[in-house]
Image 1 (cartoon, rainbow, N blue to C red):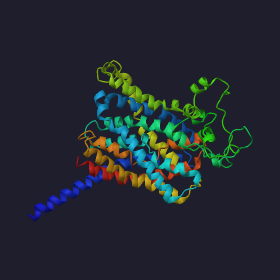
Image 2: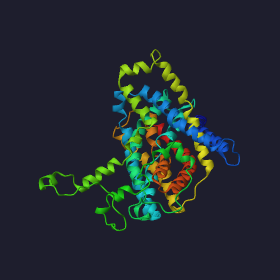
Image 3: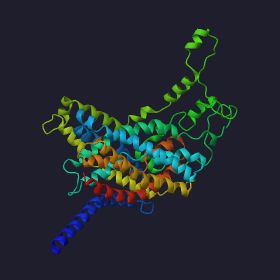
Image 4: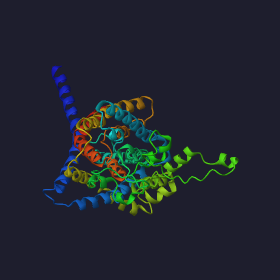
Length: 449
């Protein structure tokens, strides 16, 4: 009897050890790729120049990532699946709301400099929902003992890609305006001139800015680096008109009859309209987003899908070629991340306490809350039944560090560029440990499904 119990205990220990190894090995693969990129880009070695990493970033952004999204999402998506996967984009919104609340808590506890309160909330709330989850899914599914069963990679990439469009819309609308330079920390050079940032804010654009939005310098507009929205609503705020001149809204004199005046556009409505017009929603249509839209459209129409996907599809040679290119996405992203870490952190005036607060909230507290949200959704039968990869992707949305795209938006708006760069650096360093820890937990939790 005792021998039988000993054998059971030994088998349980071996099974636990195998689960631990299965969870750690995928992260070790990614870490190896990151280390290679770090060594190649290190200033002392200078084996590969920085310009090469910038070119590789453009290839990932414009070619490798769209190919991966199109081939995997297009093959997996159907009208039925869209009805089943509805909680994936909703989960992005839920994680963002919870992250915002955590960011407010970090502001109250850590008390960052007043000009960086919005940055603290943003960096806590908006995580990486694209490149890093795709890399993790690819690495997890690359192992022979993957717990996610057949079609692991296709399902994982499809789930991650289906969530990206929501995150991109949030970044180019809500985050874009939240990243507006604070009005009270700008100065007027002379009456009627543009508002300029105080000296010392111009820094060289780091590689992480180029990693998620190559060619960002071409997207700058007349008002992208000014507190445009604050100036639009200046007249209805408590700020002094003599200190900050209002923007000309093109208002005409009210000499028309009373009936025409009643039909005129109200002042507040006009200001809201101008703010909406200044939202760069056109930037949402980037190559990865276009690939997602095409994949969804083609996947929902069986006649179109039959042309691209399947062994006997007339255009299968096109999708096969795109699939070959898509294979370069994961190693390229990890090499770029290594190159970013090789640059080191930028000087930051955010403060050590706030930096630690954001990192702890984003990488340690938010995943715990995410486990509770996903468990509650599972109890309410909102999730796809019996699909471990579905739940794994939902949990990853709470676990990744802040989106690298936030650094690009900071550069575009001219707001807290050094601070955002430093935060992204330290978060990605500590994410190597937090991701390993939580992936082990997720693997153990998913074995009970």
